[in-house]
Image (cartoon, rainbow, N blue to C red; front, side, top):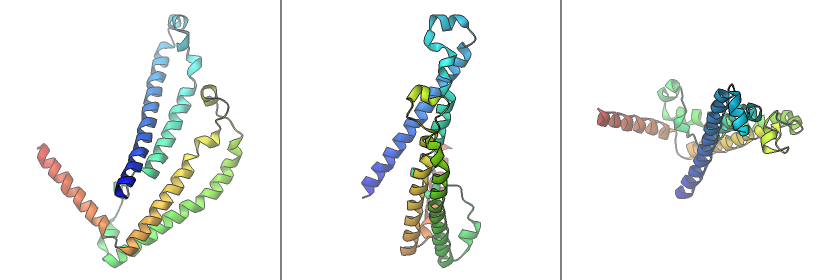
Length: 196
């Protein structure tokens, strides 16, 4: 089971890496076009470098950024990788810590599920609206709603993760949060010693 889970996470990481590579390549193209746009002779010799053909690059970079943020945070980033303020959480007894973890996990999961319907209702009209420039590259099928579909993937994935977290903490305890943070500190301090 652990092997399947690691393979799925690795596949999600590959997709995120491909999105980052696509965004970076588009950014380099954008910079190249920007600096060659002033030289008229370049456009005459290389017609494919005509700056009017590359208005889509900004929208594409924004699209990749939106997808990377929601995809990465929903499917890749682990609970312990988030920045947390846990002074209250770590200062209470293990029993209270367990219930704080369960309640907070359920609040996050339920809130994200509740948000889906009103957001979908607002996005429903966007199924008709085309993007300003991306349809020039990808064709007429892409709509503004398609760009933001990753938000729903994010909501569902994070809800599932936090429902599982609530279940896991209920069956076990919330002490593994403290163990991970202590282990990470020990690992990072030993790595720093090796560097010095």
